[in-house]
Image (cartoon, rainbow, N blue to C red):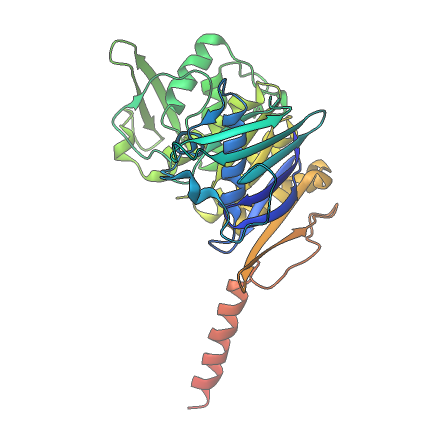
Length: 359
C-alpha cells in the first residue's frame, strides 16, 4: 500500500505531499492537478520496473508527452542533481526517484534513485476506456490495460485459471467461476445483464455477447450502450486485483456513461474492492460515486480508511483540502465548489420563480 506521495517540480506542483488511504478519492475542478498526481504514480511505477537508467514517459503515463521537459514545473524550486523528483512511501519501503532530461538526447528521461523497487503492483484504467466493439484484443495476461480493452480476455483467462476472488466480493456464496462473479456485479450495478465470452487464439481476439430478459439470443456490444462496456473493465479489474496481494487499482471517472443510481452502486463496489485488500484510488466528478463509497464504508465501519482530497486552483496556486468521513458516513467539510452546483442551480431557479410570480 502506498501511504504517501511527494512531488517536487512535477507539472503543476513545485512541492506537494499527499497522504493516501485504503480508498482515496481525488475530486475537484478541472486542471487542478488530480491527473498530475495519478501520472506521477504511473511514472514511478513504470520506472521501478526499468532495468536501465531511462524511462519512456509517454509509455509510462499512457499519454503523448512529447518532450519530457513538459513534465517539469514552470514554477520550479531548485533541486540538487535533478529536474524533478517523485517519492512514494509504502508500509515498509520508500521509493525516491530523481529525474532529469538528457542534455545530449532531450527526448530521454533519465532517472536514478533509492529503494527503487516499488512493492505495490499498480493497475490503471483511464477515463477514455474501450467502448462497444464487435470483438476485443486478446493478450496481456498480467492485468488490465489502461483502456480496459482486454477485460473480456482476462475474464476468459480467469475462468481457465480458476482464479479466486476475495470472499468479501462474492455476491452469492455458491459461485466459483470468475465470469459469473463479473456477471453478478453487472447485475448489481446495472440490473438484468447476462454475458458470454469466447477467445479465438488464432485471431487473438475475444468476443462478447450480452443479453437480458427482453431477448433470447445474445447481441454484440455494438448493439448496446456504452455503459455496459465501460463498467465491464472496472468490475473485471476490481475482481482481478482482489485475487492478488499488494495491488493498487487507479480508476479515472468510474461514473462514465452510468445512470446516477448505477454510479452510487459503483461507488459501493469500489469500496468493497478496497476492503478486500486492494488499495483503490479514484478520480471522479460524481457526487454519487462519493456517496456510494461513504455509505458502504459506514456500513462496514471502515470510514477511517477513506481519504478524500479536494483539489482547487486559484491565483496560480493549487490547494488540496483533506475532507474526512466520520463513522456515520458524514463529511467533515463541504467547501465551496465541492459538489454544490445543484444547490446553486436550485437557488437560481427559486429566484427566477419569485421574480416571475411578481409579474
